[in-house]
Length: 421
Image (tube, rainbow, N blue to C red; front, top):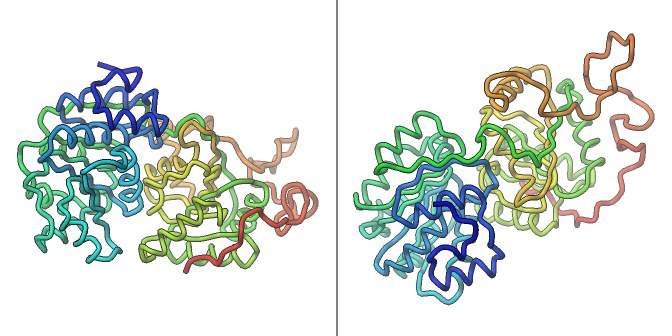
């Protein structure tokens, strides 16, 4: 069964009102395939490109289950705090304001006593990260005997981050008779093996290619040396408007780059795993509300960060894992919008870029799915032009303080804030 409209389903009235308020009318492909079967009680093993509405794909069946089963509890596990926060926000919107269903957000970096208070209220919806959920299970502040609905979101990422043992432990506290929905951006063999271990005859749903970005993202690369990277970055920041995420490899590199950009009057903040949760929340809020234009991030932000106005993703450093490239650039072109993704590639990163190309082209290296940004057109007889970055040092487009149009940097319409340390 595939649906064309949410009104076709026998959903609770309060959930239909929430969907109408959220202007959810036509389901995305993953929602159209997963929701009807999940409402029938089937276990689901689903994969789809990032930004295609997976949260509502499991959220609508989850909320329906809680409304129709007054003693049931549902638990959602995510790999990162940011994703857990955003999942909780979406689920609360789906539940609506006038409801007896209480919720608890269990993530690291937040006050334990606040979470104790949430758990004392006997919530029926639990969203959190595996580590903190296990902390509460060990303290016996969380009980999962009635948790008969489980969602594992971004399962591949949780396993990549080493959460496999912790997931096993959480599931050992849950009843065997339960419904399980497992969503993963990629579907390697160990994910399938995990589904066979914890799910009953799961329905496999795959929508689109999980190894290719959505078509609304325009990709481009610039080849350069490591020493040319920062100048090329500032040149690109001057030439582009709107909100930008710049991805780097390390936490220290994120702090250093954001601080350097701040000294040059770019409104930039940073987010990485060493920041306290309140600082991470503050930076994301500033970025969401356009108080800062540039967010310098490690891969902690690649999954789950859903901010519709992000127009550009710049990979200052290429990711270690090719699949993370798909998640990084998936932060733009959200909810049907268009976006641009740029990679600054040094000779040392050629191997990483080749692996990304193979992933996007089903094992073959091909330049057809991206363009060469900022490069000089090939001239007849110019044997030295090998598609490298335009290295002109004067005139329009020169590196340094001048932008592509030879104009000095002007003040951005964003309020400058100090880069988070």
